Length: 272
Image (cartoon, rainbow, N blue to C red):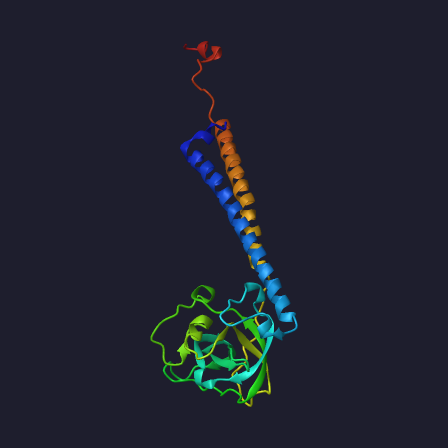
């Protein structure tokens, strides 16, 4: 009854199922790995955002790389803004609108400066029209903000392009920007959260980052891939049983043999 399982059509189906099962296993494991990584990153970011701010010089220094485990750590720094070297960071969206981040060096009393993202401003009426940017506060200010790592093409998905208007950049590439400045620059940059004294007018603050659901979507995808294993096996078994049932019913419905010899009564009928 089950010899049909060795036909070419069914052998191809067996191979397909045997290939799909390990693929679904690996895809599920990959999604679970992403869930664990994103959950760990989300938990770390949440702890850093909740921690009390510390002086910037305790966790960063000029020319250094900010470790990933310090991302979004609250920091404080005091200094004077240098508007002459202020930059606009293009292609930044906030509230569903395109615009610019306003990046202003804050020169500390000791000499090194830190790049401060003072906030967001909308783009002008056209791409060529400069936006309206509130000037930075003059005199010494104390800034509290979130420490961020220098941006790269890989970390942002933004391609750095030449030929931009003067005073504009696409990435907050701290090492690259530091080469243009007349003083040492801390390795990370600070996303402004609070300033004292407060500015009379200022760009719109950058919202506190959403740490997300910790990769909950990846967990759902992982479960989904593993459910597909059961679906593949269940569908394979169902097709086999249906084929066997159809063959069995076809055999039972075949007509009987009607070629037997005439009966004795027919042979003795009149006229025979």
